[in-house]
Amino acid sequence: MSSFPEKLADRFRRFHHRHFLPKAEEYEELAAYGQNPEAMVISCSDSRVDPETIFSAMPGELFVVRNVANLVPPYETGGKFHGVSSAIEFAVLNLRVKHLIVMGHSGCGGVKAALDQSAAIQTDAQFISRWMSMLDDARRRVLAADQNASHSERLSALEKEGVKTSIQHLRTFPFIIDAENKGRLSLHGAYFDIASGTLSVLNHSRNEFFPL
Ligand SMILES: [Zn+2]
Image (cartoon, rainbow, N blue to C red; front, top):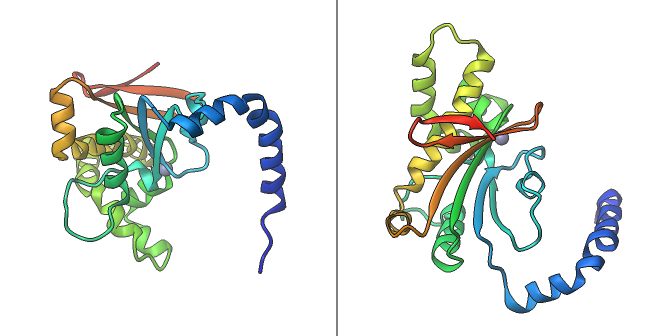
């Protein structure tokens, strides 16, 4: 049996000493009373775009789902296991989060695979091609929008279109439409540029991202 990575064990000890022990009472309260986060973030699994780090979040503040390319599938009840939809349902109906944020990022490998249609070639992919096919329509829009755009411009455009697509998919869930209509839930799009450390936020009325 392989041993637990020593580096991570060391990092855990560091966390326990530097972060857990000074906040032991807060953790105790969180354990006793449960979580009450105001926001849910749906972000990419990419190791460079950790929402808790980007939003300086404390334990109990953010309810997070991460997956390849921060995608939300459209509402459907067929199939068997809906990890993303379950988390959204729990966050909106049980935790009653006030804000739901889809956060994309620059240099997204999943979006690049969608743009290049390369997911099936990269690996013996059983899952990723179908997952990324959620961006097929967005990809066609990006390719049609500017014939002279460079690959990196198209990638950036599709990363942002992907956030918009996920927000559109969120609005196919009846309980999200209901919560939005009642004014107790706001949907947001965000885009983190890794190189510059810039966070841009989607302006819904102009359908564009603007830096904070
Ligand atoms: Zn990504």
